[in-house]
Length: 295
Length: 131
Image 1 (cartoon, each protein chain N blue to C red):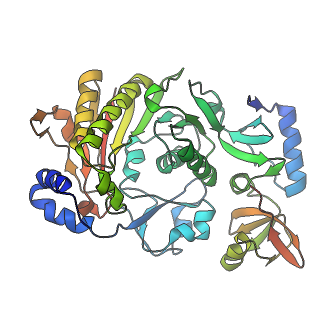
Image 2: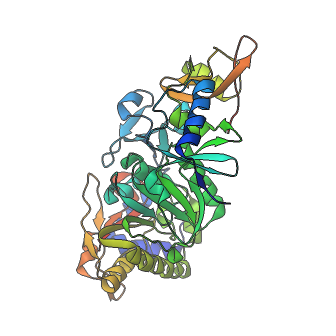
Image 3: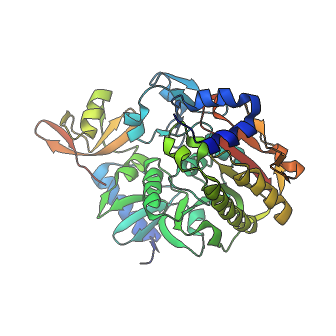
C-alpha cells in the first residue's frame, strides 16, 4: 500500500519509533471478528460452530478466519460481524436495562445492536442518523438482530432535540476514517488536513448538542475510527473546557496509548490522558479512539 | 401517517389469529406493545413509545407483520413456540435458498431458532419468502 507523504509525516510524528510496526500492520489484512447476539443466542451455544478466538475485551466476541457473514447463524441474527476495537464504545458506555440512550450517529447499527443486547431489549434507544440510505441498513440490522427497544430517527445529530434528557449517549462521530486503512485503502487516499478540519468542526457541534441532551450525572462516550488529534483529543478538550464534562478512565484487557496531551503547539487539559488511542499494531485491529465524558 | 397502539381487545384478536395460524403460545408477545401504521404491525417496548424528539421517526421497534403476514424478523424474534419443522444445517441452508426440504410444519427451525414461514411443496416444504 502506498501511503501519502502527508499521512506518513503525521503518523510518524504521532508514533515516533513505533511507526515502523504501525505500517507493518497497516499493510496486513485486518482480522475478522463477530459478536454473539445475546438477544437470540448465548456464546456457549455457538461454541464449536466457528473456528474462533475470544476477543479479550468483549464478552461473547470472537476473532475468526471463517466466512461468518455467509453462515446460517448470521442469517438468523445470532451473530453480528463487527470490528473488534469498535466494540469498546458500547462496552465503555455500559447501558443497562432501564436506561434511556441516544445513539447519535447510529447507522449502520453495529453499536446500536450491541447496546440493545447489553440492555436486554429493555429501556429505550433512540438510534439517529442523517443519511437515508444508511438508515435503511440500520433498520434492517435492528430487525435482523431482534431489537425492539429502539426508535429510529432521521436528523442531523447536531440539531436533534428531545423532550427528556438521556441517561447515556453514544457519539460515534463521522470522522476522517484513517483508522480503517487496513480494511479500506480509500480511507488513506481521502485523508487530508482540510477533511480533518471539517470533521473536527462537525464533531464539536455534535458534542455541543450531546452535552445538552445528557442528564446531569449521565455519560457520553465519544468515539472515532481515526488517529487525527484534531478529531480526538482536541474535541475532548473542547468538551471539557466548554461544557465542564469530566473524562473517566476506560479500563479493559486491551493494549492502548493514552490520549496525547499536546500536539503541534496546542496543549490539552489533563483529562485527555484518560482517553484511549488504539493503533492497529497493539491488538491487531482497526484504529479507534474513545473517551468517556461525564456531566 | 400516525402510529396507532393496539388496545387490549385488538391485541388479543391479533394474538388469537397468530396462535391459530402458526401455533405460537401465550407469552410470545409479552413485554411489548403493538403499534400499527400503514398496514404494518410493529412490536416495541413501552419505554420506546414514550420518546419525543424533533425528528422524523422512521421506525418504532421491530416490524412484526406486513400486509397481514409475519415478517422474517418477527418470526425469528417471537415465534419460538410456533408449529415447527426442525431442519439440519444443510436443510436450513437449502430452505433459506428457496429449495424444497422435508417436513410439514408451519415454521422452519434450525435448532431452537425459527427461520421463516414454510408452505407445502410436493412432499416437502419451501420457504414462503415472507418479508
